[in-house]
Each structure stands twice: as C-alpha cells, then as structure tokens.
Length: 215
Image (cartoon, rainbow, N blue to C red):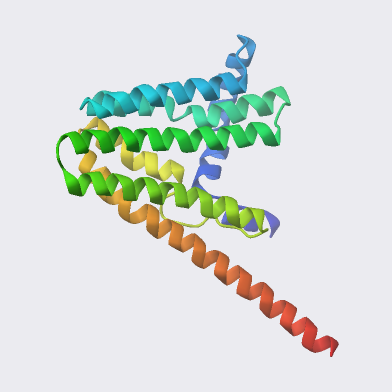
C-alpha cells in the first residue's frame, strides 16, 4: 500500500529520475571522477542556457533549441552527482532550484526579444504569460510544501514543458510552443492551487470533527 501511494504521489519528473537512474548514475559517476563538482555542473548548465537564450533572441531558433536540448538534462545530473558523492544538502537543492528558474526565464526572455524584434505583439505577450505560468507552477509547489501540503499535480511540470518546447524550437515552431505553454502552465498552476485548497479543507474538516467529538 505504501509503495502504491508513493507512485501515485510521484511527479512525472520524479518518475523519469527513477526510470533513468541506470543511465544517470554512470554519467554522474564519471563526472565526479574527473573532478567536477555538482555546483560546477549546475553553473555550466546555466551558462549553456544563456547561450541558448542569445541564439533565440537573434533568430537562430533551431540552434537555440539544440542548446536547450543539450543542457536541459543537466538538471538531473547535478543532483545525481551530489547523491553519489554523499553531499546532498538543502543549500545545494536551493541553488539547483534557483538556477533552474533562471534558465527557464532566460529561454523565455530570448524568445520574447525575438518576437519583439519581429513586432509580433501577440507572441511577445504570450512569452510573458508563458514565463509567468512556468514560474507559478514552481512557486505553487514550493509554497505548498513549505506549508506541509503537496502540489505535484498538473499538466505541465518542468520536464513536460521541455518536451513541448525543445521539439518546437528545433523544428522552428516557436509560436506553437509559446501558445501551448502560455495556456497550460497557468492551468497547471491553477490545478495546484485547487489541489492545495482541497487538502486544506480536508484537514479543516478532520480538525472540526475532532473538536466536536471533544465537546
């Protein structure tokens, strides 16, 4: 029963980490052996996304997509490296999460600049909406967990966002990606808000029943 509950509460990102553990562990182990540290890999990933954002901003959409494809998996590698080294820390997790958010903002920023230079007002606004939604998906989970709720539900976690974004960029369909992300990231944030609301009301109901029993 416990394993079933764990699988049910596992996000798609968590599922992929478990599924590809056999691939990630050897690569992370190799990076550890050559002297790289997890935070170095995290920063390397951020720098790669800066290059990707620049390429997108100047209209090299396919090349920007390829850079995102190469550097996106680093999100899983740095954490795996830390685990294998026995050096997982809350600060390391904090740095990883912050750089992930910066990486996403940079990519959306590159696209926003590109569409603004094309005088495409609608696409420019959609880039802002998509970036906002992506940040809110992450924020709602972080805020919920800080209050001891769970908020892993939703259409588009970070991995799903990349599954949409990367192919669309590589095939030079950025407007398709932006429309999808602008809609479904915000729907995901709303899903998580609703999920937390249900949990909060369920807890209040339990507390209320206990208080009535004690009267």
